Length: 131
Image (cartoon, rainbow, N blue to C red; front, top):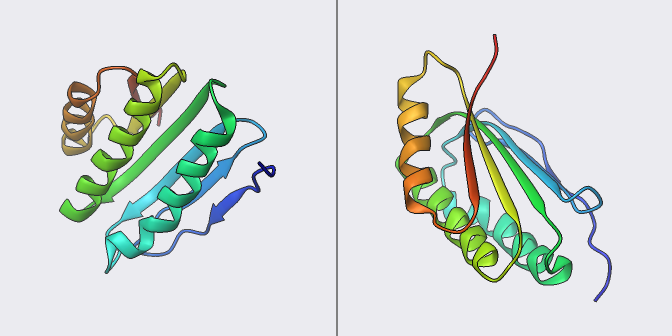
């Protein structure tokens, strides 16, 4: 398999900055997520991530998410993302997701708790953002 290139998408008003760096096995998504067509926006992310998971085997990976606001379509997409990562963790890949939230944003915290409850094999941390 060929080495993976870094995957980067700049943030817009309605979509997060996405930075997946295969050299460090770290990924981040930051900003708001309510793209007009959520499936179309996130499909390249899923394609890249599937390739990354196949390429890197059991190397540990870290995903930092700091999503300020997201709509219901994005919530479904995030759950699909966590399902993909949880399946990789079930096969032996150490996966850690850090869900960053502002302490005053109860909705973001509660959504993080719900996501955390739905995964079984990966580490899912709720991380309060320091002001």
